[in-house]
Length: 142
Ligand SMILES: [Zn+2]
Image (cartoon, rainbow, N blue to C red):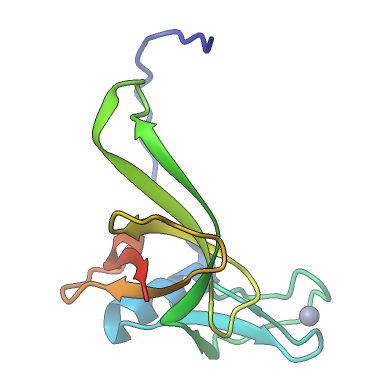
C-alpha cells in the first residue's frame, strides 16, 4: 500500500524553456506545427527542436516539421488524481512518435480508446494558441 504524507510547500518558479523549446513553442503558436531538429550526421530527428545533437554534439537547426500523424509507442490510463482521489473520467497519456521524428512526445490521448501500442494517432492543435504545450490539445485516433 502506498503511503503519503500530506502537507503544503509554497514554491514559485519561472520555467525557462531554452532556445530549442522556444522555437518549438513559437512554431506551434504561430504556425500550428510541431517543429523538430534533424541531425544530418546521425540521420536522427529530435522533437521538440534542440540546439545540439545528443549523439554527436553537432549544432542543429530548427528545420523539421513533424506529424501531425504519428504512432502510439506507449500509453497509460490513470483512474486516480495526484492526491489519490478517484477521477470522474479516466485520463490517458501517450508517448507518440510523430511522423518524421525519432523521439517521442508525451501528451493526452483524446477519446475513450481502447488504446493500442502501434495505433495511428493524429495531433489535435487548438485554434487559439498562446505558445504553451496546451496549444497541442493531445492526440486522437486516426
Ligand atoms: Zn548527430
